Image (tube, rainbow over all chains, first blue to last red; front, side):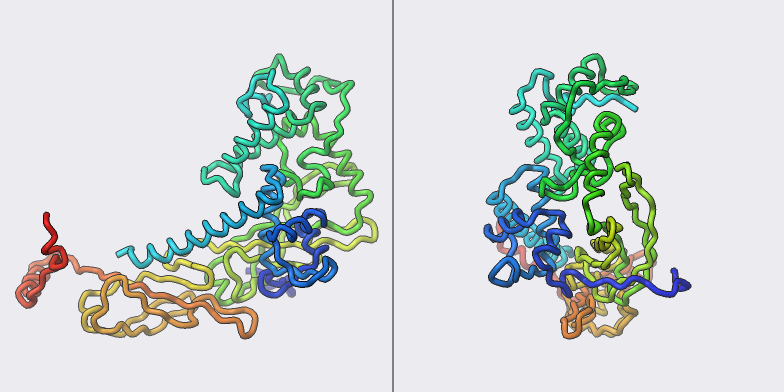
Length: 108
Length: 330
């Protein structure tokens, strides 16, 4: 590979090493604060901290917020609908993972 | 450039009301949205539908498109007539325009069709240029990269190429290829994101650059399946290895290990190699496990000696493989 290039970019794993502030999450998703705030009120995102200035979002919120944004923008799903859709999508992902593990057991 | 019939895309008559446009879009968007659709070419379909809706939902754009479009058919070679939009004012920003609607980066990144760009591009360019002039911090960018499973085990340095949209002073969007030398940290998993500070869009005047988020995908491996931090391997064993037990060499993404197969193992038995899954990056984070699933391989009976061995087995065992079916009425 490119071992002759002296330095290589070091990143942080968002899901493990980073807590995002409200403004960082807005930047990363290009979403307005009001929209993110509405999702917090609906329980779509669950930051730590009492007030918006103190909110710290776990790294996995990034994927969740971006998915919520796409559904809001493209399908015109409202805030309550986003909460339901994301819960169902999480459940499907869990079931699919279980199915994968089970098919390993029953393959032979 | 081919003419696009946006009405046909949404399955509508030209006389459709704005409500009918919205209904048709919503129905097709739900069908083709890449986050919810299982159809193969969902993304391409969704893009077509989104572009059609972008024009038809906006009464100004729709009126201009209607006036120009009535003599054209989908697929015909097309150039927009000069001043085709004379007398129309477009106030909507467009799907590739500014994100001040508060809902994200625009529907399709920086990739409208040539047809849309020829008709409505100038307007979108103007809004983008206006936004550039006022913006200070560069925007965050997102990209997806594929790594090998071995990279997640050992860490790696990878040279990656990204197609980056760039907006110039006039608001034109061009894509250019950018090569980055990135350290893939040991322990990263499928679906996680790597944040590279300051590697997003260049900032405006005196502004900070944005960040670059890389979503990690792991390439399918011919031997191993990945589930979160756990990794699965199907291991073929001979019947006598399973029955009598043995020690065999097993490949892992981090080199081979010796595995003890307990006597009396049956097909499908899962043997766990603790901590041999994807390692943890952060100190103290627990590594995943490697599961070895036994698959009993039967030797072929191609030769007389092999057939004789099978016959000897048949004689040596008083074995009825279907004993569990007995007593069930047939």
